[in-house]
Structures are given as C-alpha cells and as structure tokens.
Image 1: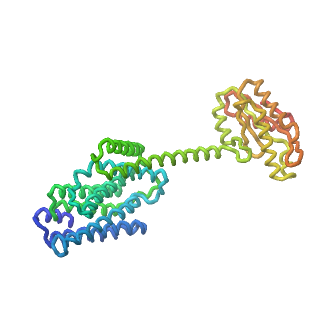
Image 2: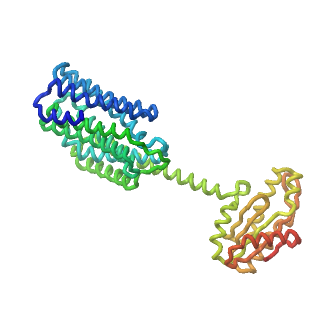
Image 3: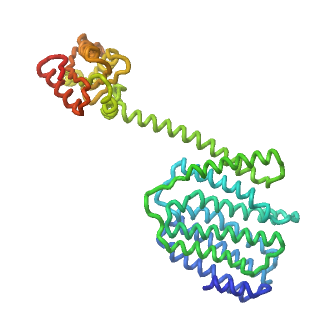
Length: 444
C-alpha cells in the first residue's frame, strides 16, 4: 500500500515536499527493511547480513537524498547518498546466489562459466545501452564516476541473474527475485535516460519504480528457496554467445576507435581470457577423468585390466570368433604363506609378464582377483588352443625372485565363443576340472 501511495502522490506533485517525498516515500523502504528481517530468519548469517546491509544502505541513501531535495540538508551532501547507493551493489551480489540455492556447491568450471556469461552480457549490454543513458559530463570527476558506475553495476547485476539460470529451475522465489532485480536495473536506466534528456523530476512516479523493485526482492524472501541438491549448469549457448560477442566488440573497437565506450574493452578481454582458462581447466579435468577411469579399470598390482574391464570386454567379444580362457595358479597360496606377501606380489607381476608375452597381438589379458587371470583371444580353434597351451607352458620353468627360485603351475579353462551367455560359467568349470584332474588345459 505504501508503494502504491508513492505512485499516486508522485504523480500529483510538481515539486519536492516534506510529506510525500521525505516521509511517505521513505516509509515504504523502511517497512520493506523491517519485513526482510522477518523473512530472513531461516537464512544463514552471511545471506542475512549481506541482504540486510544492502537494503539498509539503500534506505539511508534514500533518506539523505530526500533531505537534500526538500532543503533540510545541504545539496553537496547528495554525494553521501550516492556512495550509500553504491554500497547496495556488492552486498546484493553476495546475497543473490545464496538466495537462489546455497545447498549445492559450485564446481570450478561452473564458476568460470557463470563469470564468462556475466562478463559477456555486461560487455554486450554496456556497448548497446550505455551511450543512450550516459549524461554529458561537465568535467566533475565524481559526477563522471557515478554516471558510469551505476549503469555498469546494473548490467553486471542483470548478467549475474542470467548466469545463475533461475528460469531453468523455476520456483516462486527465483522468479520473483529475478523480476525484482530486473525491475531495479530498469528503474535505474529509465531515470538515467530522463536525467540525460533533462526530463527527470525528483518525486515523480519514476522514483517509485525503485520501491516496486525492492518490494519484489523482499516478497521473494517469503517463498521457499530451492532446497534440492540439483545443479543447473550454465547453458553452453550462453557461453558461446558471450565469447562471440566479446570478440566481435573488440574487433569493432579496433576497426572504429571511439565508436563504443572505452570501458567495454576490459570486460571483453576478461571474457576471452576466462574462456581460455575454461578450456585449459576443462582439458585438465578431462585428462583427470580419463586417468580415473583407467585406474578404475586397471589392476594396481600388475597393471593389467581388472575384472570390471574384462567383463566389459567380454560383452563386446560375444560377436567375435575366438576363445575365453580362465587361468588359476597352482600352489600360489603356500608360496605366499612361506615367502610373504611381498614375494607373492612380485611373483604375480612376473607371471603376468610371461602371460602377456605368450599371448597373440590384440588379445586381452586381465587379473580377475587373487591368483586368477582371464584372457580373450581372437582366432579359430587351432590358434586359440595353441595360445592356451603357450600360456600353460610359460610358467613351466622357475621364477627367480629376490634370490629365491620358485616353481609354480597354472590350470587353464578353455571355451570357444559359441554366442552363448554362459561362457564365464563354462570356463570356470573347465578351469576347476583342469585343477582337480591336473590336466593343464581343459576344454568344455
């Protein structure tokens, strides 16, 4: 009601007055500040402090600005109001991401993506929107500073909202908060444009647009935040557009110096730099993921593929002519008990090397666990059986390990690939039969 009342009073006054422009206008943001205290009780301390201070500084800035407008303070104190308005931005920047969803921690790439989109949108918006709203400077440095910093901060604020993708995880809080932020930036640009064209009038209805924006921000606090653990990444199209337009704008600045505001160069270069950083980080993460996947499918002791990798290979092997072999070492446990695990580990590595050398090219050899190995060999029956016999023979002569001479044997279960799904079971039966009957190689 207070916000609506400022519209009515602002539309009917031709000059600032004490009742409408000081008391009534500032009663609305003070009431919103009080309501925000109630709405933020369930939020964490950092969110509460950042948002409350942002609103507090804006309200105090508004009070000082109104006091100077109605001549209760010297006009040169308006600079204090501008500084207080400026403090609103960094604090709201801190609060907004946590108001959307603070449960899901962002990854490095997600933070870089959000920064690329924010800078890219800021660059594009600054190039398109800044010229119409910037006033003609009279040479005053502070006036120049505030004339530039407010619209730039608004553009970054809008870019932050876009980079957070609130519309992909739609809920009432995200929607209303986004409307509030967009409304706040719109109010800034409308009043800046009016000032630039000499049409701005203090206390008019356009001043109430800021109150409408703050009303939406505070209203959003009364709605539940997204408490899920879901993460919505920045859309790749937004990243591509941000990088593309930054490159185009830099090219345009090089071809036509002075055509666009000079401060566009900074965020444009930063966007392209972050895009390069993102590429480096993405490549490194891809390498790490590849290494992790390799480790997840590799036996640490022998460096051979593990059971998981072997079973995946077996599925692909089902359409290939060849044979599946399961190998189990004979007498490994007594040797491991007698000489210790270190000697046992060295023996397993030595056995795996002999097996590897005995297999034909493009065969798969894996350690399935303990002293059990598996092999997938392509070819006809004669060639695969020769490979099985070669594997059996490869351990027929002793191993020299740490000064010890160790003899060991192997039992091999052999099955040809006939397209059935029970190859592992049949190979396992053949291997145990070879072990029980001391057959060396057993075919089933």
